[in-house]
Amino acid sequence: MMRLTPKQQQIRFRETQILELARPMIADGGLSALSMDAIAHELQTAKGTIYNHFPNKEEIVLALAVQALDLRLSLFNRAVMIRGGSRQRIAAIGIACEVYVDEYSEWFRAEQIIRHETVWGKTSEKRQEILNTCEIRCMDTVAGVIRDAVAAGDLEMSAAGAIEDICFGLWSLVYGGLVLEATSPSLADVGIGDARGAIRRNCNALLDGLGWRPFYEPAAYAAWVEQVHECLVTHVASSKPGVVALPGRADATARAEKQGGRK
Image 1 (cartoon, rainbow, N blue to C red):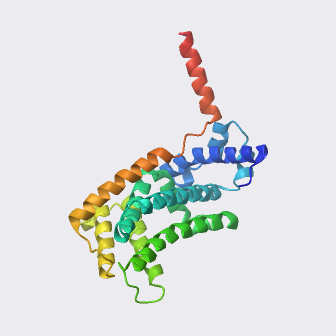
Image 2: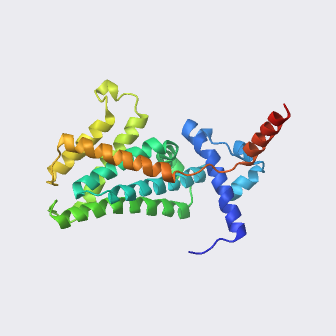
Image 3: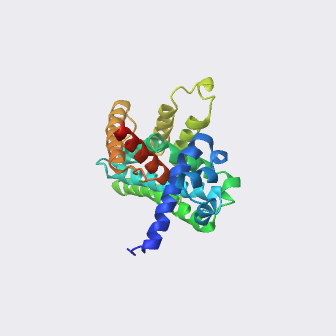
């Protein structure tokens, strides 16, 4: 692994600070709430310095989306390491998606925004390629469990390309369902009181329909979900990104402490 020069380390740290400030802005109000002026003020630097790191607001959203997929991949990788059969491990990835949305909600918001064509079209090809690579690695993790199921005799493939079809089917159900849960105000009006329960049932119906053994059994599945959820939340607690030092906040804290000492 190539070591960064002091200058490169400084650049990377400043970009991390920018993203740390931008993330809650985007989570609260979307792209329109992202303010380069506010970030520059918080970092006590010129706005031009921010543009030296990110040429526009869309590029900041894309950088956060890359972080998001890295975080999700980490959860996927931890999920498939939990001891169990192939059907249990594929279920664990689904639970990892839920934990990702709950624990990294601000990153999830950035990931949703970057998928809008008007935002994506204003970003650099270099960072687009990084995001695509991260997404492919997530899907490769899912495909790996499917291949394990075939090798173990838990699942029979009837056509070329079926593994990719299963990946896409699960991705559509889980990611699409979680986006709807986060953004649709009318789910309850159409009879969906428990979106995640519906997502899980639909995934199990898909896998049962494919003949992926062992078939869904509610009590065993519920116990597995609880075990996996606890394991993944613990993983997040031990690996969640730390708070980055920000100049303005550090100075304010120091002043408050100093004033408190005088009283």
